[in-house]
Image (cartoon, rainbow, N blue to C red; front, side, top):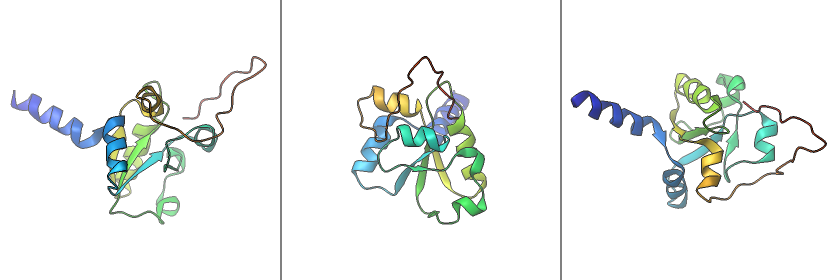
Length: 132
C-alpha cells in the first residue's frame, strides 16, 4: 500500500488536469502553460496565456528569458502525442519547475475551456501534419 501511495503522490506532483490548470490561472498563481508543439500547432490553436517553445528547440538559449520561479505546465495535442512529456523532461533538465497537462489541449477543450489561434482547417483532402 505504501508503494501505491507513493506512486499516486508522484503522479500528482508531476501532472495536472485541465480543471486544476484553469483554476490556478484564474487564481493568478505563478503558472504558465507551455505548448511544446511546433509553432504551426500553437498558432492554429493554443491555451490562452500559453507560450510556445517546441520541445525540440528547448535549450539554455531558448529558455534564458524564462522565470525559474514560475511553474510551467507543458502540453501538446493529447494522449496520442508525447511532445508534452519530452518538453517536461527538457525543461526539468534545464532547471525549471514543471508539470505535464493530462490530456493536452484536446482535454482542455473537452472540459469546455477556451482556446486561441487561427484554427486552420484542412481542406481539399490534405492530410493533417503532426505538430509534435
